Every structure is written in structure tokens, then in C-alpha cells.
Image (cartoon, rainbow, N blue to C red; front, side, top):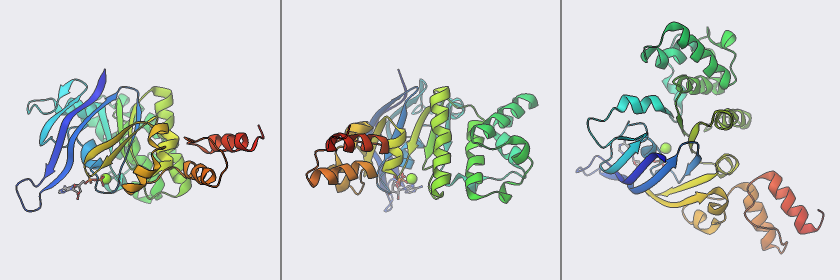
Length: 285
Ligand SMILES: Nc1ncnc2c1ncn2[C@@H]1O[C@H](COP(=O)(O)OP(=O)(O)O)[C@@H](O)[C@H]1O
Ligand SMILES: [Mg+2]
């Protein structure tokens, strides 16, 4: 059964003013428990607006959103219950750190749930560990003494400490250096693989989408224009290019080799697959 279910969801900002913007238009989308879905699309295509409906931060202008069986278009819906289940990590979340210590910051959510101090402590420690930070070392430190990548991980730990069943990540690796990116994404990949946590990942990077997600949803000007297995979506290179996106670097490499006459098989998504495909085409395997 679908955990997140949007039915002809439309979101209009500043409706009825000269600044009116239709950010999300007629989106029908179902995301099941346990999926790892990437949402890609050009800047301004409505990605952030769409996912803010998943944890009840925004209300549909029209259409419906159901999350974990709760109909969010109902004004009386239990939004708090939905926010407990769906953790949203904003773009540049380090701007929202506020605690005097890392421990205080990460414990904010669980304390607000009214959990006993022992349970709060366990959750904070577990959350910090799952993003690769040692609680003993980092817990007492000021968030503002940390590197950019560490601050980002503390923010992620704050979301994880709520034990969400769904993690919505809005460009979690944006602005990090390549190593920071790999580490950050590695933590989410592990959480998905080990705990079966549902992940919705917004990303600018086709490489990230290909490496992590089984399913890719493409937005363009507020509409879902493609939705399917990563392998199928990324073979539609011409359509992706037409809306200002691309394909993963290795997919592009293979396309170029084909264009030059090397009969490499298409729909290659990872470096390992590319190596195999090229060896096959050269008759080396
Ligand atoms: N708070 C807001 N008020 C008015 N317009 C907004 C607001 N947030 C986003 N928009 C507009 O809505 C559209 C979709 O934005 P957004 O959801 O942020 O797209 P994306 O995350 O894909 O870059 C854009 O045209 C953007 O300018
Ligand atoms: Mg955005």
C-alpha cells in the first residue's frame, strides 16, 4: 500500500496576486513504504514545494495528499503525527542549527516528543553514530565550531533522532566537497539498506540519482514528466537534455562510445556496469 499518495496535487503560491506562481501542477504520485526514490528536475520545477506536502508543511491548493493514511487536505488532520513519521531535511539545513551544543541541537525533536531523558539520550547517540559522528566527541561541542560537512551531518542527525519512517532529503549533498558528498549519501544509503527506511531524495546530480535510487521521478515546470526505474528514465537522454537535465556521467560516456561505433550496450548506470559493458563490446570478457 502507498505510504505517500498525491492525487492531482496543485500548489499555487500567492494565489490571486500578480505574483501568483503555480509551483506544482496536477501531480499524481504514489510512494510505497521501503522505496528509495529520487526526484530530479531543473531549478524552479517544484521539487521542494512538492516534498513539503509530504510532512504537512504545505497544504495543497487543490487535490489531495495522504500520508500514512492521514488525509492532509482535511483541516482537522493530525499534522503532528505525520511530522513524526516523515522527517524532512531541508536544503542547507546547517542554517537551522541553534543549540549551544550538538547534543542539545539533536535532542530538540525527541525532547519535544516528551520522551524520557534516557530515551532522548539513546536516540541522540544513535542518530549521531548513524551519520558517522562519535557522540562522546561531538555531543558537547558547539555546532558552530564544526566544519560545513559536520554541521550538515548534525542537522541530519536531528531529523534521524525523531525515528522517522520516511526520510525526505532536499539536496542533502549540495555544496559539500566530493568526499563530504560521498560520506553524506553513504549514511542514507546505509539507513535504507539496513533499516528499510523509505527515502525520497531530491538531487541536482544525475550521478547521485543513478547510484542510489531504484526509481526516478522527473519534474518539469511543476509536472511529473517521467516516473520509472532509474535505468529506464536515464535512457531517455534526449528528453532529459531538452528540459535542461542530463544523464549520469557513465551513461553519457557509453552513449558517446556508441555514437563512435563501439557497440556498447545502453542503460548503463554505474562505473562498474560501464567497465563491464565496454569490456563486452571490445570482446575482452
Ligand atoms: N515561498 C514561495 N513563495 C512564492 N513562490 C515560491 C515560493 N517557493 C517557491 N516559489 C516558486 O515556486 C516555483 C517552484 O519552486 P521550488 O519548489 O523551490 O522548486 P525547486 O525546488 O525545484 O527548485 C518557483 O517558480 C519558485 O520561484
Ligand atoms: Mg528546491
